[in-house]
Length: 327
Image: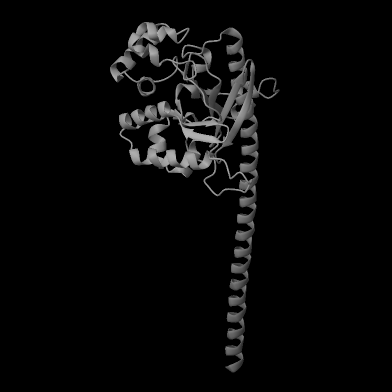
């Protein structure tokens, strides 16, 4: 009797040990599978990002070529030129698979590109607010009035504008004559960095279609500026008149700033070559690449000097696994 009971206990222990062994093997196998899957995902993400960056670099070079050829063709920039036409989402797979022996490659690699070029001088440049002569730094009164009108028209808080003005003065005031470093806010390099000087994200988003931040003071392009930007830049030009100017411009672009004074004589005295122009040097290039299920955005500022177009700065977002659209 006791011998049979001992044998049953041994069988039960053996069964329990077998079950524990199976559970341990299953856990180890699941962990190994997860690690392998994770490694494959990381490798795929890195490969897709590298491919996307190369394709977006090519797209940026293409945009620079368009701007260079535009400079060869004309010295006037307006919204009816090829650079101003947005690129709708276009499938690149057929071009990338050209010359492949296997025709199914076109379906194995799905890349779609969209993008556009924006004239940054069609906006009011916040950098114009700062005037400097030697060691003397001050706010430009005419530009200050322009931004006060713009903030008022958009219903933005004037307190944020005042904080921005004080921040700009603090950032651009030179250090002491002894050469000691002066504590103060950093000078912004991009529009988004104006948040350092007191502008909220809501204000930056609302202001972005009408204002920019460029490396140097620039005139406003009368051919590409919105009606609201024209209204803010030209005292005495109400919004209805500005909209009429834009409507006239759509029928025939301006060849010189005097065309605007001929159209609206009361603002002729306000048009100055230092503040207004019909040509541009700074452009924003936006690109969005959709590679299979991933998307990558590119945002770049380029400067055109004659027929030379160089990149001032370039940024990329993270590789996204969900649908994205150009802002």
